[in-house]
Image 1 (tube, rainbow, N blue to C red):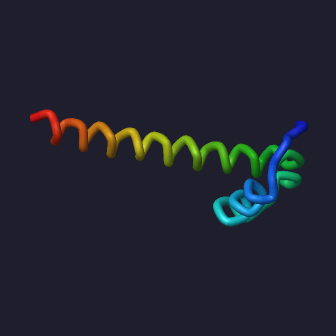
Image 2: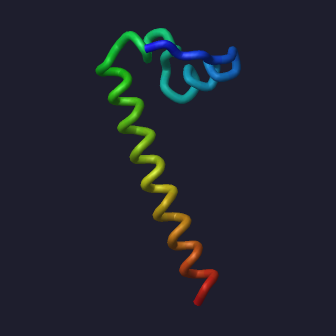
Length: 58
């Protein structure tokens, strides 16, 4: 997996997931955990947006 990333992206990856891009690209199990967590966060944010949207458009 060939990834281009900046120092800021590397720092954010460490803060968010406790690993750098090198480990992320090297270890499939870690990559799957990160992507599963990202998917869960995305789904939760979509629920929040839908709830706020419902409240606004009553």
